[in-house]
Image (cartoon, rainbow, N blue to C red; front, side):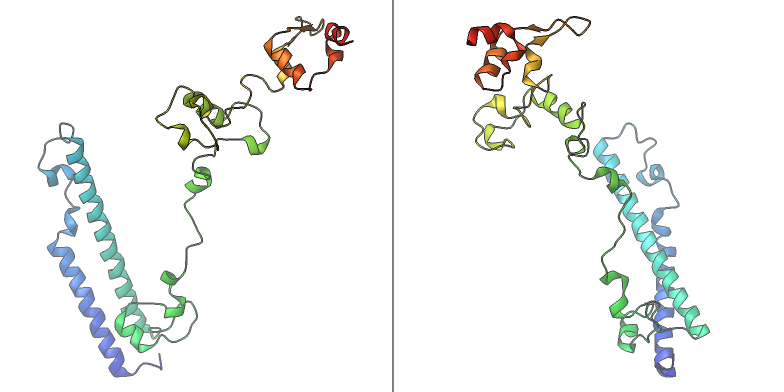
Length: 242
């Protein structure tokens, strides 16, 4: 505290005392921003139930604002009282982060500060985030499990089902490019529905899993024409090809 003269300390103490008394006076005159009374008493209504939701929201907003103002003034009052105690024990004017003296010019502007300009917490971006963000990340895709090699029903499948009933979007607003049909607007609209491999549409077995039967319909023919078909799977088709 050697960097501050006795005159400077007296001036700073006077600033702190005036600020402390001003805050205490405001809290007393404002009756702690009305927080001692209930919302029902503040609104003058016997019940909030019969009020319009907009009126209730306005009352809640005002109450939230009063709480914020109250907390801000109480925090400022605590900082001032801590600064006055630091003056009494000889630690006032020393940066709590670096241990270096805080310039008098900064103390004159912010007499209750505990940090120099370089180490002020307000100058640093917070590194901690609410724990809820771990669950909410990513905000609109956390239930999609495709990147986790999950083959079951997930959030993307649920949205596809809902979206298939129609939306107010147009093909121009679709996720993919060159979409010109409302039937192709859904997310991954070309994904198979109810099957993984194409041959699951036309290959059947009995209840024991044997006696393979080929249902030679449209899906079967499309599969063969695409060059993906294995004719060994269907002896009849193999003979026809030969």
